[in-house]
Length: 111
Image (cartoon, rainbow, N blue to C red; front, side, top):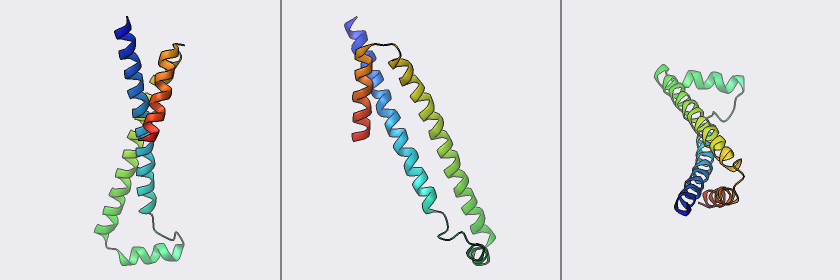
């Protein structure tokens, strides 16, 4: 029916927007993780950093790195699942669904 097709295209459009949103979120988490890296990774700089920081600060840094890694992993899983769902929708070879994916991707990237 017409209402079912409109609803399907709208849901696929939202999935495409979600895919782009997750992709941007993953990039932001990666940027935060990179900013948390020490400026220099030389042996001397790392040795000085270990001398300057106490054990509690080092554990906090490791905990922060673990949270960055877990959040990136979760976002990656969501991105893969949504991406495959969108791909399967496109493989229905329906022109309206395909246009919904294109418009949703453009809208998601724009936002």
